[in-house]
Structure formats: structure tokens, C-alpha cells
Length: 562
Image (cartoon, rainbow, N blue to C red; front, side, top):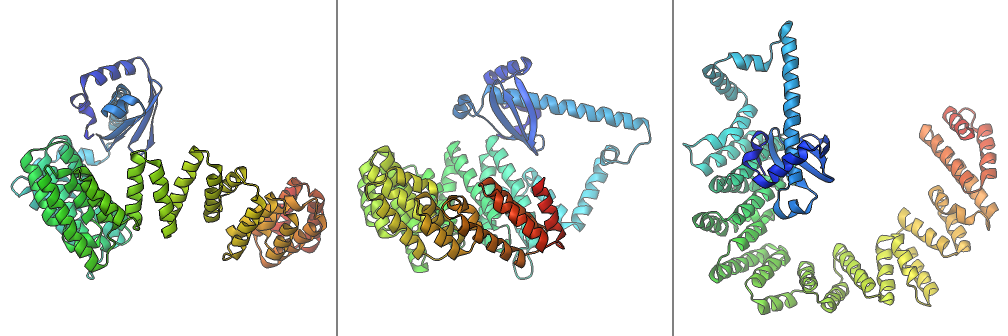
């Protein structure tokens, strides 16, 4: 979606356009507003639609209705576009009238006035001279209008543009500063928009050359872009996304062949492997395969790439997953199965196998693969994913013993008490022993405030109050006391009051300033909330007597009284 807002009739089918006009005229477009810069939203006939216009071109749009999800356009979005055009035109007319009123008085020398009085020849001379002396302007000028240049080979002009941009922002040590990376990103943003426009206008060759130029020129400097590597990498990913989108539009067979030959030749370069870009070439090649011969050539290329990965010590799993995808697409299921079974110890391959089993509804295999992965000792993120999956499966099958088991594992990993409560709801007869074993494990782990709070909360919720008061006294933490003090108020009132007195006195002795005073007021308010108002009043009197010179504390205590 990339077309001028003023010419939307030429880009929207007649049916949704006519229905959109009817909705607009009936007053069905409500709450039209600019939610963010260039992002406009409205409620149209009960459906929320949005459109991005930068600055006068429709870049993207969406609607929550089913018709948009199926067709990419609907009457609601069409109505929004028509309403927005009318709104912007009305705003522009208002500005024009304001300028006319201003013209009745002394006129200002504005850019618009100057441009209205300068000849084309003089303007071109000025632009040429300014570009000669201002490198940033020259780069922006070339980026904006490179597509209009026809006497230079299409790809060569974009390669030259990026080469000159990179040379302009590089330092002597070949690194690119944050400011330089921002300039490079602005050029890439412009080229990204031009690629989308070229695809929308079916200029597939031009779009291909822009995307290829970005991939070739920007990948080698990716790690030099200080502070902006992630953003610059995103533009490379967008270049590949645009090529995939282009392929889906079914361009001329000659262009598809050229693109396939390009990807087959280009992917093997070290720069792409070093920046994890080579895998994007393989994903593109998967879309370009049109015959068993081409599929085999791609598999052979993958084998060669795997050999390079092994020599360079790179993880093979991403390439193996690609290989599995190609074999599955080619209908070579047995080869895929053997490759998968042989490499199940690799997290990426295991997850691929699980996804394949889930897609085919093979729940027992999903459970077996996930359990196998847990036994292997997978990385923390994979382990978390497998445990969560097994927990959901156990819930769906109402296997409460397994629910209890995996909920306890998730609690131990995350200290999220929703898992603890889930485990307790499905607890077996030996729940008390389970809790004791879990507490033993938690207490054996390295100390953190989060682990400390989890232990205390387990003590509290399981009614182990003697253990809780001893744990709180040993920890000597005011934060912990605030978390669980309410549990101890009745059975251990005197010990609890002593703890509050001691910890608050220590806090005041070791901290000064307004924030400290506010913290004291918050603690005293908390005491009132949990039914320890008597203690709060005693502490207020003590603090006033002991710290009269601490003005912020006195002010906070006054607020407490109020």
C-alpha cells in the first residue's frame, strides 16, 4: 500500500470505494484523529480503522474487520481515507485563507514566496552549488531522486549512492558514529519507501536492484554502525522481505531466474555468514525453487554452507532447520524424518520437530519430544518453553498430577506465584512434603531479593508463621517486613513491633533527604492499613522527639496526620 492520498480512487477497487463514500456521507466516520505523527485512526460503522500517511502518500492501512483481513481493503478503510483527504484539504484551505489574511498586512519572506518567484534554471543552479558544498544535502538529494536517473545502470546508481553515503559517514578507523549511523538509516528509509512504491507500481526490476544494493553494501558495515546496528539490520531484513514480496507478485520468469542466480552466487560470502544474513538468502531461494532440480541444487548449497559453518565453529542448527523445511516442501518426508531424529539434541531442531508434530495433531509425540528435551538439559529459554507447553497439554488432558509437576517446575524457574497456586490446586496428598522440598531448594539457591520474598510468601501462605518470623528477623529487611508483616501481626505482635522499630531506626540513621522521609510516611501508613495504628502513633511521637531538625521528616509526618 503506497499511493498518493489525492489519487486514492485509482488505487482502490470500485466496490469498497463506493461503499466507503456511502459510509462517509451517512456520518459513519467518527472520532477521526491523529493518534501519532502521520498515523490517523477513526471508528467507521463500529470498526476501528487506521492509516499511515507520510507525508501525503498512503503508506499503510488496516481495519479490524474480516473483509480487510481477507482482501487487504474494505469499505471502512476506504471511508477513513476519504474522510482524511477531506479533513486535510479543509485544513489546507484554512491555512491558505490565513496566509491570504496575513498577505493583507506586511508580507514575510517565506520559502514558498521565494520558490514562487525564482526561475527553474536559477533554482537548479542553486541546488547544484549547495549540494557541492553540503555533503548531507547531496546525499539526501541523490537518495530522493536516484530513481529518476535513467542514463546510469539501475543497480549501479544505487550501489554508488550507498557507497558515497557510507564513505561520507565513516571515520578514519572505518567505524561509523551514532550520528553517521542515523544519516545512513535515513537514506535506507528513503530507499525502503522507493522499493515499496516500485513493487506497488509493478516496477519489479527497479525494486530488485534497490533491495540487492542495500544487502550488498550495508551488510559489510553492519557491525561498524555504533548504537544503530539493530536499526540498520532491520533495513537489510526489510530488503529481503521486499524481495520475497516481489516474488509473490509473480514477476517475469527472466527476473525470477536472475534473482535466483544472484542469491545462489551471493549467499556464500563471508560477510553474510559473519552477520547471520546468509540464512535470509536460503529462505528467499526456497521461494524461488520451481523444480526438483532446483531444490536439489539448494540442498547441495546448504551442505556446502554447513561445511563452512563447521570449519568456522558456527552452530549448525539454523541451517538444519532450513534443510528440513526444504525436504518437507519437496515431499521427501523420510529424509526429513531421519535428519530430524539424528539432530534432536539441537534446540532449534527439537523445536522444529515439536512444531511439526503439533501441526499434525500428534500430541503424544509432542509430549515425548518435549520430555526428551527436558532430559537433555536445554538452554533456559527452551526449557521454559517446553515446560510451559507440557503444562498446557496436561491441563487440556486434565492430568492433574502432571499439572502439579510442571506448575511446580515453572514456579521454581520463575517464582511466579500463579504457578504456585496452580500447583496447590492440583496438589497430591503429600503437598506438605512437596512444599518442604521446594523451600529447601529455594533456600539453597544464591540469595536475591526476589528469592527472599518468594520464600517468605510461601511460609506465609502455607501458615508456617514460626518459620516466617524467624526468617524475617534473620533477613533484617524492611521491604520484606512490609510484604509479610500482616501475617505476623496477631501471633507475634511484640516481636513484629520490635522489628519495625529497629528497622525504621536503622533506615533513618543511614538515609537522609526527602525520599527517606516519604518512605517513612509510607511505612507508617502501611502500619495503619494492616491494623497496627497503635504502633504507627508511637513511632510518630518517637520520630518527632528524636529528629526535630529533619524538616522534611516533620512535614511528611504532618501529612500522615492529615
